[in-house]
Amino acid sequence: MLIPCFFICNNKKNIYAYNIVGGGKVNYIIPNWIAFIILAIGGLNWGLVGIFGFNLVEWIFGGYNVGSIIIYVLVLLSTIWLTIVALMKGYISFKQKEQ
Image (cartoon, rainbow, N blue to C red; front, top):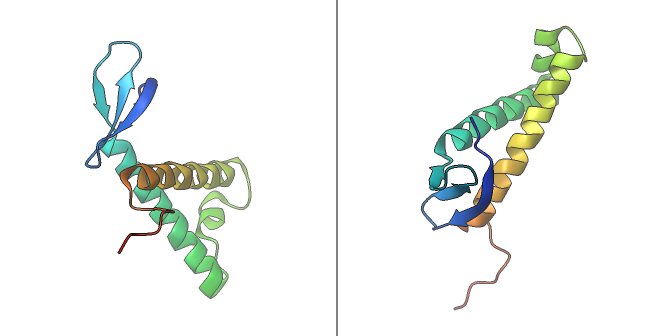
């Protein structure tokens, strides 16, 4: 369960959120893994669409309906989440490295 947080702290090793309700740090390792798995499923689906023209999500849910839309939204949210995590940990940088 994601706990509502006041702000997020980046210590370059782990990303923590400080809980509004009870205080203290909350580590987001489990949501990161969940987001990674959902993103991998989305990548697999788009690979199948691109190579074979086969949409696995629509095949599972019987077409473009509420179930497939929920999966697509989860993939979108996972992408946004992991991009933010990567930016905060410094894996993605827009600064030029000094030589």
